[in-house]
Image 1 (cartoon, rainbow, N blue to C red):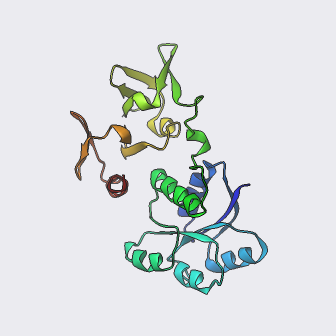
Image 2 (image 1 turned 30 degrees about the vertical axis):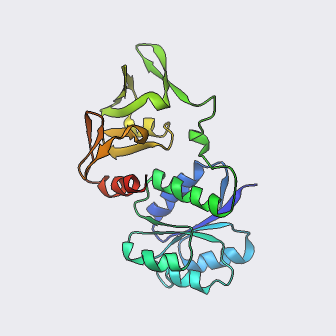
Length: 236
């Protein structure tokens, strides 16, 4: 049975991003999207809701005020651009607290926390990234030949405009595909650190505020990615 969710957020772009993240999980189902807490309240009166993605800063009623008004609320994952609400959110016993912009890796961890809180025995993995026997690898086209690459063998991916260069320990494969499209095919242990780089988190040996080391290889952390990347690495 799928977990029913609603998203309450007054920012259309933030709402669309969460919708996109949710769509990668075969176990989640969005039953409504709302632009304010009042709309969310109306949905809760008519729908069975298991999980709310709740923005904090909204007109009329903040997410925290809304949550405090509910006598028996569903599980809640708070979303906000403001770090200062973190302490208050934990006092409300929410599942997790996500800072915008929300990366998929961080979102994935929040969903796992939700299922653990529900005492589910199986760890939830997005349908697109499930690493069962049939999907531990990807086939990549180079020179009209499809090369099989195990995800666990990939060190990092580098963008070359309309191409990507896939680096493994023993080989380098170049294929015609934009890095943003290739990123959607990778499992959750890959991390976008820069507009031109994706790294395998399992291969990271060290990092600073400016770069990531994969042994002797140094991968830059882009300015716009820095905050999210460092938060994820600190949690690993």
